[in-house]
Length: 266
Image 1: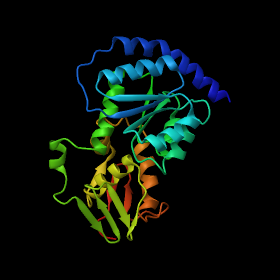
Image 2: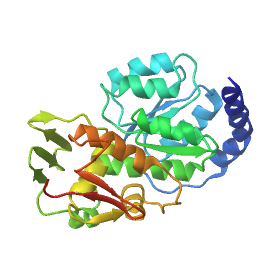
Image 3: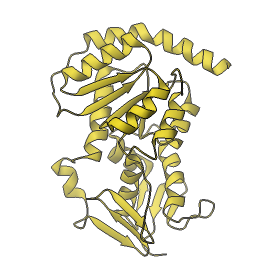
């Protein structure tokens, strides 16, 4: 209960600064009409965020109740969900966990800067990325665009770096970038968009150690700060899905003090 009150206090302290940034942040780019759902119970904050994203060419809907958000996300299937943690009804973590079997699009979670546990839990529940509050509107927009580009169409320069084949096979494991799907022993693997991105990055570099710095730069477009655990959490979620033993992994190996290695042949 103490943590909940502390988070509300931090959230309240961030509001005025965030409102100011939303009103005064300049923007010049416009986007395809991506359908974004904001799940946020603060009406003024969600309205300002909605206006900002719509001014950049996005179609935005807002939901302030976690329980209703679950049904709306499942039925409306937006291109991306911006999900706050503190909500009436079901909280953000529960919303993320309950919609994941029915929704494959990106979920961008908003967390309090000091709550590292919330960030880890959000990723474990299936969030694709998180932004710590308070966040500059341009940063939020950039993270939304980055997630949508990864799920839909990559820039040409990124495509040129990919292997010539869009389908990679490693024994009974198949990973297909054009379909954004993977199969183990002929059975489809349930992966979030962020999990697929990481699996494809690792598998398309099979036999080569990828540092956390490389992974962060490729997947999130930011430098690794040495503390963020999101990649580690995601690897731990992927391992059992691709038939790896989490306690003694043979497919995706952790290379101490370096990074991760996807093994070509077992």
